[in-house]
Image (cartoon, rainbow, N blue to C red; front, side):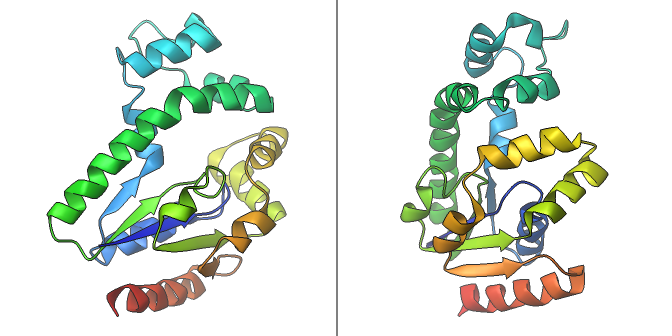
Length: 197
């Protein structure tokens, strides 16, 4: 089974590419979704996050205030590193469980939708690394327009990730998502052909 790492900077449209690949029948292991699941109310990971970043992050229902955690965790590199040290081992363990399930099901390829694939060196464990690339200013515009982030927050989040040149250097396949969705679809079709070949 091929493990295909799919990555891109925040706001690149990586999740759109993952959806397109899922529509083509490829199982997708979504690291962001796993990150949400491991911080469900009552989870040990959430308890540790609250210990480090403040118990006031947890509301009366036991749920995490994700926006406030992001504001605190992504403001400084040291804070980001603290959050990653708590969450990444749990994300990795669950991701590996899902890879094993896909292999046991006889899948030919599994897509690992992982924003920090290159940042963490996980691209080395993939059979193929796909990078969705978009100019940084366009990513900021999308984060402000579509996700409602303030521009300084958007730029801070981008700055906490590995730079575009490093990400592109790790790529086996680059998908340019600066253009319209039709152009994106054409590139994804070529990738599908490669994965099915």
